[in-house]
Length: 349
Ligand code: PMV
Image (spheres, rainbow, N blue to C red):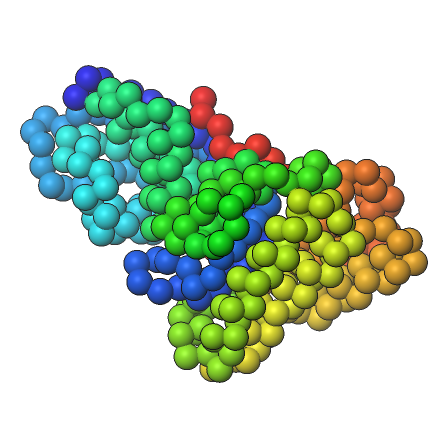
């Protein structure tokens, strides 16, 4: 142990999947490849401090604070995660940890915080190990370990450690080097997609009706299981070609189809879930009408919940903002729309 005490902070963003991860096997491995935009504004900041234990012990000593308050629930979850994956962090024998976490997005915005928080956690743990024990692990290797650790905590978090566009899962494309164990950046993406905006319409900021853990489990006996995984992997290839070519029209078609497919899967699950709310459909209809009238390439995607992510290139931002204020804002809960965009990934400070 080189440094007895120390502090490190990381900020890590959320991400929005274009091709969704829905269904897993083994130790947190995905049944199909997924691709996402890394976001910029919706993020978690974690401040880590550590001190050396008086005597090495197997007990995991961790204090966790969320938005300046002790958060026992989250602390217990992190402790359980660390206990389960103890072999990844031998340092826990020697160090006491304190973590303070804050999110940039409002509490009840219905934005899943697991991708941003679990990627921040993974990055923090990997850098503490590096610094406290002077391991001299280079940045690229640290990110590799962080995507691995983040994946074990929450699958989609594995993608958040990379800038702009990331994928996770085995595939045959030479420009996408991800595997089921490690996410990776998607190379060769057309500049237009790096300018994409994501206006997140909060239709309902409440708790998700189905946790993603339960959602993934529903795919185990799903009647369309095999068909879905095969098709999702095909869609990854199609999407990659679109991302390379800069074809924003085909992007709209594919991304919307995929979002509705995720919801279709949930409707066809046993038990069945309808996660859209009436205003989710109202927003979708407005988007499609506006696209038809204006000829502008904006489209929507959905997570496993009722909120709508509206995706569009920066070049049409002004027109879309006007449309959002007049047509969409009245459909959002408390008028809440969070303006986000494709971002550069985590930052350490
Ligand atoms: O990472 P999890 O287990 O919370 O699952 C995420 C599932 C979706 O957000 C619906 C899709 C995805 O790929 O992010």
